[in-house]
Structures are given as C-alpha cells and as structure tokens.
Length: 417
Image (cartoon, rainbow, N blue to C red; front, side, top):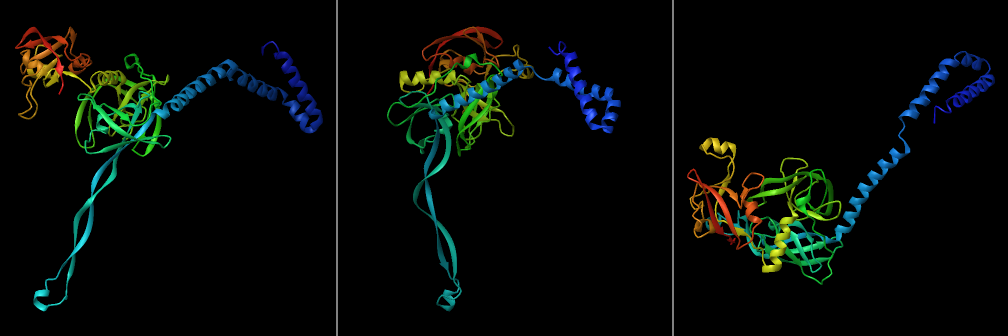
C-alpha cells in the first residue's frame, strides 16, 4: 500500500516544504538550499516507523491473549473465593499471674519491717482460650465436607473454627485424618447449601500449566491469591512441621505460585477453576518453590470416608530405603532400583512389623522388593505410591530379591492402623 502511493506522498511533502520556504523568506532560502538532506531525513523516518510498527492483527492478538489470561484468573478467583476459608486454631492455655513474696533477713535481728525485700513469684490462675495457629481449608460438598492438611488439625486438645471470606464463622468437626498422607477431611457445622469447589484430574497435568493458589497467608491475610505455573511433577520431599515432626511426601506437585505458612490446606487451582492440588509445604530458604498434594490422592480419601466413615489405607508393614546407584555400589548389590527392607535408627524400629502382611508373606530384613504386580519400584514410582493405589483386601504379587535370588510372593493387604 505504501509503495503504491509513495510518489504521491513525496510530492505533497515537497510541495508543503516549498510553500513554507516562501513564507520564511531568508530562512526559507537556506532550508531550500538544504532541501535534499531535510527531505531524506523525514522520508527515512516515515519509512522506519511504517515498517517497524506492529500490524492491527498483531496488536489485537496480543491484547486478546493478555485479556484472556487475566480474565480467566480473575474469574476463577471470584468463583472459588466463597468456598475457601481460614482455619483458626484455638487452645486452652494457662493464665500466669505475678505476685510478690516479702523476704526480710533483718527481721529476726532487729524486729519490725526494716530492710525487707519483695521477690516476684509466678503461679497459674486458671486457663483461657487463645488463638495459637491457623491454616486453610476448602469445601468440596454442599453438605459442608472440606479438605485441609492433617497437620493443621492434628492437635486433639485444640478446637477449630472456620472463618469464611464473608466474615461468617463455623465450628469445625474433624471427620478423618489420613494415616499416610498429610491430609484431613473436616466438616463445617451448619446448614446445607455451602458453596464448594470441583475436583480436577491431577494425572493430566503438564509442566508449565498455570496454577492459582488461595490461602490464609501467614495465618493473617485471608484468601490471599498467588499465580504461577506447575514447575514439576512427582517430586519427593521431606516436610517438617512447627513441632519438628518430619514426613516424607512423594508424587507432590511443585509450583512457583507463592505458598506461605498459613496457606497449608488451601486449594491449588487450574485456569478451568478446578482443584488440582492441596497446598502442603514450602521449601525453606528458597524462593518460588512450593508443593501441593495431587488432588487425585484426596479423591481416594473422600471415597474412603463415604464408604467407611474414616480414611482407610492398605499397608505392607515394613521399613525400607530406596535403592540407588550409590547404595548399589556401596553394598555391592546386583540391582540399582527397588526397596531395600531395613530397620530404623532405633533398636525398636524393626524392619518387618510382626504379624503384618509382609511378615506373613515371609519377607525379611535385607530383602529387596523389585516389583508390585509387574510394575518396577523406582524413584519415579516408589513403593509407597504403588501400594497406595491398592485397596484393603487386595492380593498383590511382589517380585523380591532374597539373598541374591529372585522370587515372587503373594500377600493380602491389610488396613493401616
């Protein structure tokens, strides 16, 4: 289009310059003398701006992309916000009061109150209920069932209150705590008709997808929203709570959406507004590294509560460590994968629990479990996650390495107590 009208544009430009020169007089004469250089400068600037400017379609495409991404996040937050609540942890704590004992070392010698001292003393005077912590939860049914982390509601001596974003308060009943995962099912006491979130499918996640975290950040800022991406999948971490207890979590989702203390138990959402994870931990001393339990693990817990009234998990009854290349070389093993059955650090932490399914199947210390129902035990597919997919009462076939010889054993899984 520009080339077609190039001559016409240049002609009008020259005509305009000539008219200006006549009006300007002597100054115009000088400009006319330099007309070639001036003309070249303005023409080149026009060409540069025309060629470098983005087209209308490019501007529209970029605008639509930005508006769509932003609008989706805003829409997800608006729809999800009513179903997310803060959990206030309260506990009876001692009331300590100060009083003074009078001590007078001169009384016996001089009599009277001469030279007395008042010494401060402390004693307990009853108890009072105080807020001692906080976390996050989110509703998953209209009847008031909700999910959070086990460590948020793990204190049997505490009481829990749900504080909704609209200011309403609800008493919380702890329905079930998962014995294996940092997960708990709770219920908000109130009438039916609660807003709730839809659970997605965490098995279909891809690294790079948008992730939205909502939670009671630092136990102070209710329903704080942070946005990032899925940074990694199937991570294994060792998490520590405030009391110093540690727990190994496998197959967790890593995200760079900001997760802070108090976010524990809140939802990790997709752009479709579905729950893909339950926020559980943050890497201390790092930036933008948070973790969430895959929501598909929570689905099994909910189904178990509906069926048994509690969370039922199968177990083998062993302690083990994952076999790595380093362990293989150090112990001169013939394999670099599997679960090596070993006792714990203390003498009472046996490798095989007496009377457990593993004990009944004849598994002993230093056996290596290689496969579960034909699936190899690896770092990506640890033994715990393979067993977790089974049900209580299932019979599983294990390939084990016993004193250098491979063999297959069968066992019936029992409920974890």
